[in-house]
Length: 102
Image (cartoon, rainbow, N blue to C red):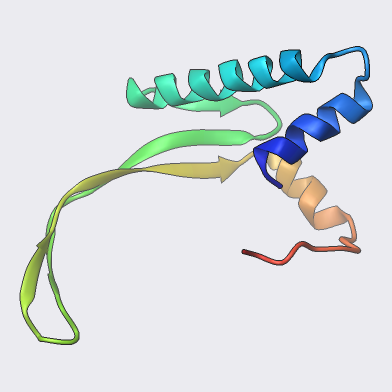
């Protein structure tokens, strides 16, 4: 599901909300999460999950084609841990239609 589908689904369930207002709310929601992560803060959304930052240190790797040793730079990435309620819902229901990964 992409952002547009999320917006349409919210509008379908809440016809009193304009699509413009829904888009603005989604902008604020995602910007808030991004800002918190950029500030190295953990984001916890109850009954959904936790977004946190993890660090991978720099390391040496080998190019499999040439055998050359290269340095892979250190990097920070976002880790998501699903909440208990989401995990329960995912494991208790049948999923009649699963979308194909792109």
